[in-house]
Image 1 (cartoon, rainbow, N blue to C red):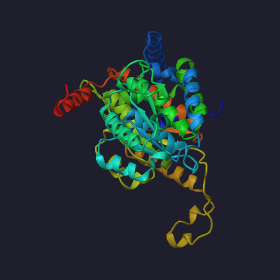
Image 2 (image 1 turned 180 degrees about the vertical axis):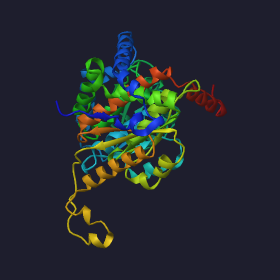
Image 3 (image 1 turned 60 degrees about the vertical axis):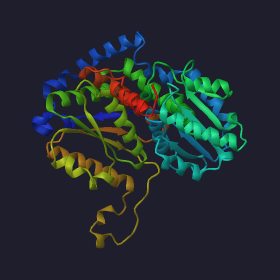
Image 4 (image 1 turned 90 degrees about the horizontal axis):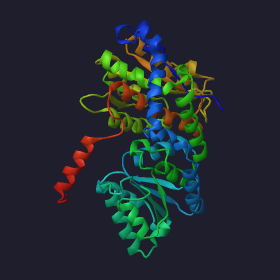
Length: 428
């Protein structure tokens, strides 16, 4: 087992940030609270809740994904995902984090909006004969997915291409319109377990099937996630960083008015991780007048965009940084006219050392400004580490929901908006 992710909460304490931080008494009580909440979560798991925690251990799902993906490897130049929300953000995140140097994989296109310009742009960039489409919808009736699928199917049929050669689906195993469409046209399909919602589905075939088609290391991804799930179930409370993050974030929201949480990885490879986290946190926790608004940021880019507000604006945010200890690949900084630019100190360093110094400097500056901040430290960015991180952030969301007293798995107001939109178009 490789080195695991750790959470540094030093800069969350009152000793560091004064009245905006967690008290010494709360820090001392943290392990006990984590243990108590874990007992509740595990009991609920025994009753069928929090099913995503078991998703990475489903060997039959991995076998199904690899069985579908393997004969299609190398056959297509383009992979088009038709999905939205958790059915799209997760794949974009995995592809960006893990396929950053792979030029041999199919070109990925994601249609995750009903904006006609997006679909038109994707269709202009592909050749139908060289394209595999994957339609993802747990309910099977997601409007954004269905209208894109309908247009694509019409194009394929007009071109005389077999749907079964160019369309895969991921949906509920038994019911829903997309499942019925799959049966009618004899399409290959993978299942999303009925107990897992879209924003918690990235480690199910909703994420792993298209990831496997991109030749990502899905087995290692799930191994890391399953290892994290094991820590959540049986690990020492002091090492259970997802629970600690969830509890502390919720405490800072309820007790210290930190109604925003800035999620700021220092890596361009994790830019979409921020987007994925925003949906996970906001849609899971924003209920009943409660919640904590997740704010997307990427270091070092947003040091020149949002950081001024985070440091000197309203002190109503928790900052969560993500730091990669060893960057692979890294770039050595050689000879140049560094003195002319006032930075001779970078000579002999690497870009990885520079960005890590920027992250550490930002964390220290935030602390000096009385802004509570924590850092998730990743040993490196690998498929296993990404799996651990994704599973951990989902678990952190569950623990935060327990402290806030909300249901992490529904989205009643989103459903209301969908219903009104259908009615405006003449539907039920």
